[in-house]
Length: 315
Image (cartoon, one colour):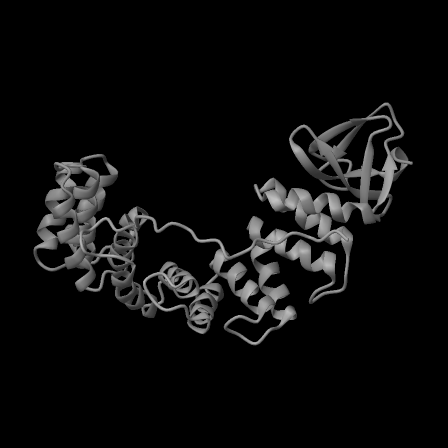
C-alpha cells in the first residue's frame, strides 16, 4: 500500500530583521522628515532627523536609527550602537524593535543572549497583536526553543496569528488540529485551516490539503481535488507533492490527445492563455468536465501542470 507523504514536523522559519517596518506610520515630525529623506536616498539627513526624534524618546525613530547603524547607511556600521537603539526602542514599546531584538537573540548575535531572552520581547509584541510575534511564539513553544515545549501555548499563538491571516500559522494550527496536539483533534477544523492557507498559495498547506482529499480525512475522498492541490504545491516547490501526484493520479481517468497538436488553456474559454502544448498521443489525467471542456493534469518540461482542453480534442 502506498501512502500520501506528509512533512515529519512543522517547518520553522528563520527570524528575520524587520527592515520593512521602516515604513511604519510616523509618530513625530522628525520621524516623518527622516522617512522623506530616506526615500530620497539622503541617508545622512535621515539619520540626523531620526537621531533628533530618538533622543526625545520616540521609539520608532530609535528603531529606524538602530537599523541605519546595523546596515551602515548614513553612518559607519556599528553593531553595538545598533543594539543600543534597538533596545531603547523596544523599551519604548516599538513592536518592530521588540520583534527584531527577539530575532537577534534567537540567532545568538548578542553575547550572553539566547532564545530564552527572546520570549519576553515576543510576548510583549504578541500581546500588542503583532502577527509575526504571535507566529514566532507559536514556533518557540512548539519546538521548545529556550522554553519548555508547550503545545497548548503553541496552539494559542498560532490561532491568534491564523485569525489575522498569517498563512504559515494557518497551516500549523491545521496540523495541530489534525494530530490533536495542544488542541482537541478535529479533522474538520484541520481541513478548514489548510484550505484557508492553501487558497493563499502556501505549498505546505496545499500538500496537506491534497493529502486530506486523497485519504478522505475531514472531507469526502476526492482524488481530482487531491491532484489539483498536489500540483499547486509542487509548482510552489513542495517536493513531497511531486511524489503524491504520482500516487493520486492513478485514480483518475486517463485520456490521449487526439489532434496533431493541441494548446492546453488556462480556462475553459475560447479567449485563453496557453499554459502548454501537447502532441497526438500525449496522456492527460482528467480532473473533471463541464460544458464541453475538461480540466486536466499533464506533465511538461516545467513540471506538473493543470489546464483545460476541449473534449473534442481528447479520446
